[in-house]
Structures are given as C-alpha cells and as structure tokens.
Image 1 (cartoon, rainbow, N blue to C red):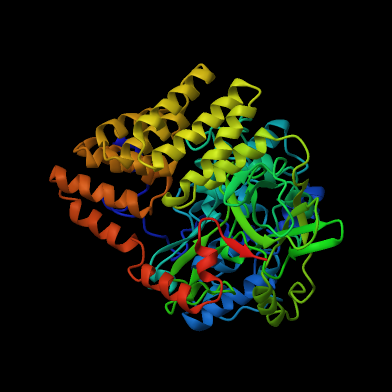
Image 2: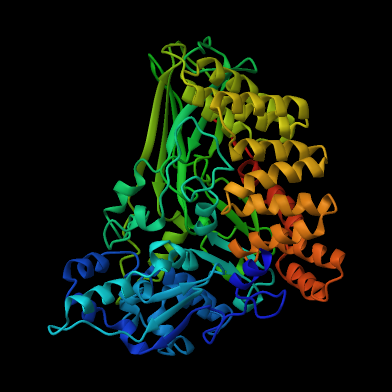
Length: 631
C-alpha cells in the first residue's frame, strides 16, 4: 500500500520532498501554447455570461491590480528578491509568470496583471499534487471549438475543460495551500494557509473522525460551494459585493453559558442579582464552511465578537470593534512582534490561532459587573471585515493607476447574532453541546469547566444522535484529563445510542489511550478510524506516532506515508517517517531526517511567544484557548 502512496507524493528522491519546477519557487508547470493562458476573450466568445461573472471575481483581481496583494508582493520583491516572489506568482500571477515578467518591475496597468487567474488558470489544469504553491500542470495545447465543430468535438472540449482535478477540488487545493521557507526568503518553514487540508479532514470532505455532531454531516467539495457561478464567491466583500451573502451564516454564534459565583449555568437558567460579577461565554461554531472560518490567509482576516449587556435602564457594558476578540491567526516576526500587514518575509511563528475548523467551536469569555437592576439582556454578534485596519492602510498606500480602490471603507458583514434574557426562556441542548465542545479545547486544568454543559446537553437530548453527540464530548473531556475508564465508558455509551461504530468515537478512544501512553491500544483505535476517514491528515499523524511509539515501525511508516500524500510537508509526519526508516535500517533515513529538520517548527517559537506575551498588549490574552475580555 505505502509504495503506491509514495509515488503519489511526486518525490524527487526515494524519501525526499518534491522540488518545484521551472518557475521555482512556485510549483507551477505548463506546456503547450503559453500565450493562450491570457486570452480570456477566446473563452468569452462562447461563454460570455461566465466571462462576465469572472471579471467581477477575486480570481480576476488576484494580481497587481489588487492593492492588498500588491502591497504584500512588492514588499517581498523589494525586501527579499524577484525570484522569491515567484512563489506568489504561480497562484496570483500565472500569466505574468509564464511570460517571464516576474523577473522585472510589474505595473498594475500591465495587461497580464489585469487577468489575475484567467479561465485556463483553472480549466487548463490536467493534474495537481498536494504540495501547494500552485502545484498543478497546465496543458495549454488546446483545440478551441469553431463554427465547424461537431457535437463530438464539443463533448471532447467540455470533458477536457472539466478534468477530474478540477471537479474534485484538487486543483483548488493546489493554490489554497501555501507555504513559506528559505526559498521564499524566510529562515524557517511555515504553512501559510491550508484550506485544502482543513476540508479533507472535515465531515464536508468525507472524514468523520474529528466530529460527532447532533446533525447529520454535510458533504461538499470546493466546486459545490464556491462555483455555483464563475464569481467563485468567498469572503472577498471589498471586491465582490455578492460575497456578503456567502459570509452571512458562514458560522453561528450563541451565548453558551453564564458564570455566576464561579458556577456555569445555561443562560436561560441564570438570573444573577444586581451587583454580581459574571462571565458570559460566547461560542462561535463553524457551521457553514468546509474549511476554517474565517479561511484563506488567516492572519489577514478581521472577524470579531461583539457583546452588549443591558438592563431596563439601558446598556450596562458593551464591546465591539474596539476590543472585541478576534478570530484570526496572529503571526510574529523575529522579535516577537505581530506582523499586522501580511509581510510574509517577516513571518517566523504563530502566536495564537482562534479561527474555527469545520464543524468545531471556540469560546470567548466576557467578564463584567452588573451595575443596575435586571432582568439582563445579553446580545452577541459575530462581525466580519475582509482585512484588518493596518492591512487596509497598506493597501491604500499601494493604490495607484490600474488598481482597485484600496482606500474605500471595507464593508462590515453581520455573520450571525444571538440574544437572550438571562433567567428566561427554555434551555437549549444545542447551545449546551456547542459550549461543551468549545471548552473541550481549553487548557487541561480547566477542562472541568466543560462538564456542566456536556451534562446539560445529554439531559436535554431529544434524539439518540443528540445523546450520542453529548456522550462523545464527554469522552473527549475525560480522555484529555487522563480518565481512561470514564472516556471509554462514554465512547461505548455513545456508540450504543448510535447503534453503530463511528470513527470519531475511535478517535476519542485513541486520544484517551495516548494520554496514558497505551500505544498499542491507541494504534488499534486510530487504525479503525483511519480506515474509514482516509483524508484526515491529523489522524494519520496520530496513528503514525502511536504505531512508532508501540514499536511498529512498518506500520508507522505506512501511516506516515499516507499522511504525507495529503500534506507532504507536515513536520510531525516527516519525523515519524524518519524514525521509522531509521529503525528499519533503511538507507533513506538520512534524507528523511533532513526533510524533517527542514520543516520542523521554528526553534525560537517558544521564546517569541513569551516575548509577545510580555511586550505586546493583548498578546497573552489572545493566545489563551478561551480569551478573556474584561468589560
């Protein structure tokens, strides 16, 4: 099995990492009539409606006419070099790259900059790998239909334009996965974005090992969600007005629980007295996207939680854009200072990440004193703006002739909202389950905080699946606390309610066994989950580690190679592969060790986080699994 998986990685040495092609450090490859890539009018002659939709898309404005991108790529070109900027160009500027124009200055008025990712940038893809940074092959040796074309000619053309790599989303993932390293001017390797990996490991992508939710999982590809027309709508609200409709409902927000006198209560049950100091947990669950929310470049997002608490006499406390906790990744430079304007050359390590994986949930805590009489109304709102203020200022400075207007105020979209009157209403099982799931990600010493909501979710369950989901969260919490027997009992109870095995339960069992270092049992549980959830990179990472720790080097290598076929530069998988080859006495072990050393986490990451905590306002709070805002 693992030999075929190895071949799918497109490695250049027996155990090595694939190298970029002729447009390095981009992985883009192309053959045929390269000039055809820019000729959108050729496609538009027959597909006028699609071409018009594309002209209003973020794909069409992906290049130097996009001031947000222009700021970032020109910073890289000036600070590091023109060659290094080609790693951006494979996805953002394929026309300019193939024409050799990335080797010199590029004006936004260049015709090649005005087409961004053109029709054949997607429809010309005939194959794609999991590497990222434009790891596709474009075949531009095309037969364009004419008035003399037969029905058979048209059918062949249609099949040629809808290759499996495009329909499956593999072509999308090749650009919506990016990484940095020495070849891009960075001292350390880092994954820059990975929508493809998040999707593959989610229920949307067919892997159920990470989530047992009350609702039946949704399956969908990139094409299913984003290509209902050729605007390829995502969250680019400054460029594509229709994106606001995509953003609304992309995630859900709840007032998950209220802490009164240190005790967690359902908001419908909590009736705190005047003068009480309470904490309100607002929970954001990613219910509407198959990748992280918000997705894409996680450091360049501006999504926040706003909260208002009021009584009969008016507003008691509120927090909104100024001070509202952010759903973003915060990246630090070599001094531990957050990089606020997407300058990739400065990026060294991640300080914290509060974006939400598909189906998962995160909690944000607000503490305040109730100054005034009740009853008290709590209103929570999740708001989205495509770029943070600092990056918009940089885009404004990069706005010139030929670019979009980066100085125009960016729209703010209300993603979702929740409103409760404390102590009134009917307790919600969905609210309790989501709160328990969110708090299951807290630090180990605070995991007991999640138990009351998990118990409420079970008590309020109205179906077997809802009860099974509550028992699954219980198993997660107990497993992380090292309470093996309790975690196994909860997993078994969940399975009994479902009436069948479920990979998320085996994943929970594997985590519980791993927590107490029972690696043989962990390997068995992870193996069962992986057999039915083959797209979950993190699961194969855990399986490779467990098998290696149990002394099963062959099994560890098999798991590591499968995981690397999904994410070829995952540091943990590269380490497991190296250790397995070393134990097996394979001659490729030295190359495998170097691959791991080249892609491991940055050595100074821990020191930089401490420095950020000490020297940067808000860094410590933002890095906490459950950020606390004192109102």
